[in-house]
Length: 452
Ligand SMILES: Cc1cc2nc3c(=O)[nH]c(=O)nc-3n(C[C@H](O)[C@H](O)[C@H](O)COP(=O)(O)OP(=O)(O)OC[C@H]3O[C@@H](n4cnc5c(N)ncnc54)[C@H](O)[C@@H]3O)c2cc1C
Image 1 (cartoon, rainbow, N blue to C red):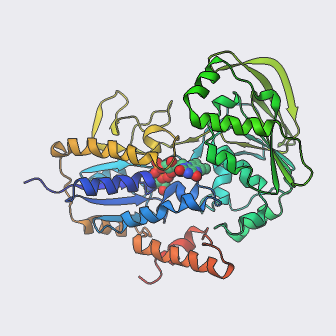
Image 2: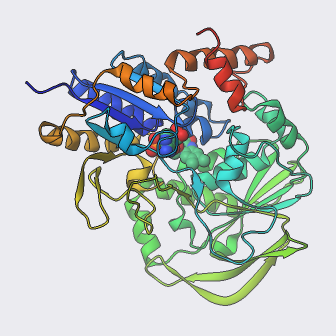
Image 3: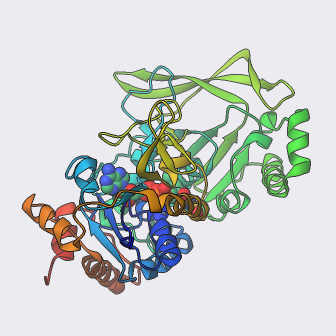
């Protein structure tokens, strides 16, 4: 008789939770423990999605339902590879699915990136989403004009969060220290720069339109960048969503600046940042080179440079995954090397019992919904392999708990998350807000373990 599967999922973001859900419904005998290095579940839904996207954050309601399944356990505040090695984990589980996501900024690789007030988007996102391990202070008092490099949805979030007034964000879950920083912001102009043309932008129509929703912000598009080559025309004829994006951008390119709104977002296409300029170690400008489309959607430099008077630069050119100790890592694609979710060694051979899903599997692109199909593929392959997977020697769920206790780790569980969740919701109630986030790890674990 084959023993029922015991699986560890590393990462309680959407990819990990969907994997646990699919696994336990396809194989009702299986048991899954989901580990996360944060005391809380939900990954970038909690620490990436912008505070003014409460509708997206509601996805946690469905994910919460998954975690209520008694065959799935949440084990928080355990950093795999640091607190617990992968080899240790494998003593307790027949297979491990890595769903560790992507949390850091990719580099832009231009001079000046290390200047003060040159920020990665992930740093700013972690600040306004109050990630307990990242910056708790931020200074916008000396930045009147800022550059945001990159025209994807993360760039839109950063531009929107810089442009909206603090009072407009008061209904969200931002804690008081984030509100204070935004309330004292000197920002009046946000310039977004794209190397390629409007038909190559990675915006989605809903997120782009949202930029223009605030009465305090006017969105303007520099008309000289609204160029299209043969490939752009082809892309436009194939994609309705792209046509919606380009129609909106074209409408904004015809606008005249208004005096009413306090802040402006300017979108510049076909401008490639070449240097972040500094004085006394801090950003004082951005140099860009004008680009032209060459016909196939790619661009080449024209040799015409512009200097932009900005006091801060936000680089939104993509997130990157980090290597996990004792596991192979594809340093070019910045993912766990894998084939359909089966983790491979650096020679391309499968490593039995190790799987990947979500952003660490396919790179940091795609919305939350995409992590579901990802998880379905990985779990299907795991279940094909399952009959041949050697069973882990230690099968009693209490055994892993005992090991964690012996390491003196302050582990959080699902009931603890419910306590913290209730605490945050209660903190928001007197101010008619959905919640106010706790942003210190010590306080989070204290509240989570309160009545144990
Ligand atoms: C700024 C930003 C805004 C976004 N906004 C939207 C949006 O509005 N709508 C939308 O649909 N999508 C949005 N996305 C995309 C969405 O967040 C991703 O598609 C999704 O979160 C990827 O899921 P994941 O589970 O692979 O990774 P993640 O959500 O990153 O989850 C990974 C989890 O693994 C944990 N972890 C990492 N390493 C370890 C380790 N060694 N040990 C233990 N745990 C570990 C992390 O703590 C984290 O909880 C946004 C992304 C970003 C970056």
